[in-house]
Image 1 (cartoon, one colour):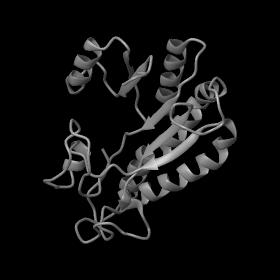
Image 2 (cartoon, one colour):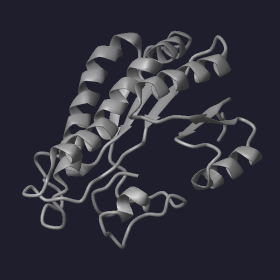
Image 3 (cartoon, helix red, strand yellow):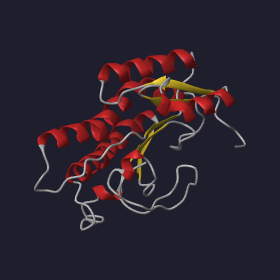
Image 4 (cartoon, rainbow, N blue to C red):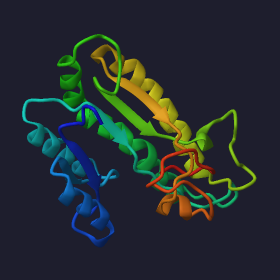
Length: 211
């Protein structure tokens, strides 16, 4: 990158655990990569993560917040449960809502310190990883998998993103939802797809789960 970021913050539930080994390896090779513990379903964890990022940044702001955590529960409309709905909704929509609130002061600070009025990721932005499975118009791959709680949560995330864009625009913060295609992760593999883009090879993917 011609102008790489000064700091990159990567979050996970257990930074010292075995599942974070690849992230630990990256951090050992890149001194500007900082690993922060975060559980997106826990408001206290979200506040603690925002505080740690703020402490690390000192007086500067945060240019980009990417809400990438997501989950899916395999179910049909007939078998969907309140427990599934609440669990998936909390991770896929409530988490991004609370993260946007918690990091808003740092995003506002970055926007205020940037030149120009155009909204951009270089200035300040919230990017929510959504899915075309949340599209009410397309009802993407319905016959392949109903995954009702997942679809509802992503539709709600799309509306949240729209609300954020209307509210935070006055602060100079860009808010957008992206559908990257299906990426091979624990979430995607849990619904039985055999195809997808590797996280190491960006490009167009197939299917509905998020990365």
